[in-house]
Amino acid sequence: MTERKKQPVVSSGIAGLDEILRGGLPASNFYIVQGDPGAGKTTAALQFLRAGVAAGERCIYVSLSQTAAELQAIASSHGWTLDGIRVEELSASETLSGAADQTIFQTADLRLDETRKAIERAIEEHKPHRLVYDSLLEIRLITGDTPRFRRELIGFKAFLAKRGIVAVLLDTQTSGGDHNGEEIEGIAHGVIRLDKSLEDYGGVRRRVEVSKMRGVPFADGYHDMAIREGEGVVVFPRIVPGSPAEVTKPQLIKSG
Image (cartoon, rainbow, N blue to C red; front, side, top):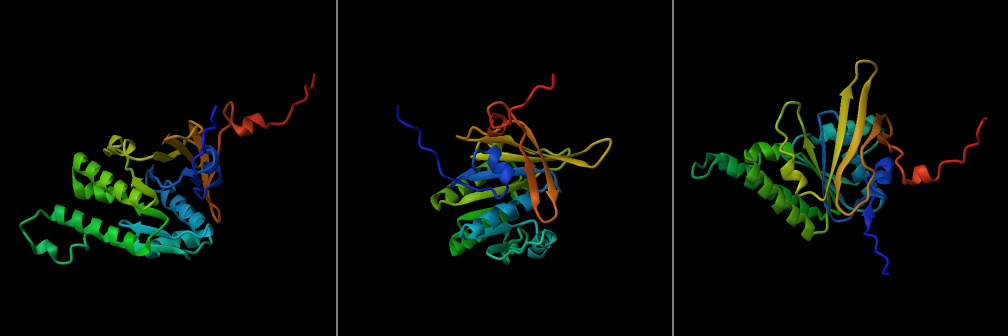
């Protein structure tokens, strides 16, 4: 019987998440990180890029929703720097370059085309190994409808795949909104959800769930997590039957 060849992986930058994924993210693929505002998406994204920098890879953070100063502030709060990470700060409302004066095409079409071209130019110029795209909410608002948004994602996925880029796309969810998650999950190689909830007593409870990861026997269910100063996102994998943590637990002695 031929031994199955293990696919190469890259570190997510979060040790506990890599453990859940049995080593890390499968290389050269397209991933979605979802969560409410404040769930820890940006911090996790910076950890992913910092792991790439530590591995000697070129990394780029394409931002439609946060400024470079805001990203620097988040990094500084943990004692990090953005050294080695190229930040491309784009604005979907500023990429028109005067094209908004045209009336032949809809403004939304122009905004979408110009935003796409600006992102592709940045990728072609810097040729990154890892990319973070922040955020899909901005593109969803520009496209205005699910089929169009889906086509845009498929095209972007193909563009990245040709260049062998490992991409993490952030998707901000808002309570009560229509997240249209199905059109994302069918396209992405993997989907990771960050969850936070305020209990009746105590502080905020944070959890992470890998809801999809093709070809990976990941650990199902919710896993507790925290955001700690100086460490960023920290994940605590739950113990499940057959997991390494469960198999290697110490032998107990009966008290009688």
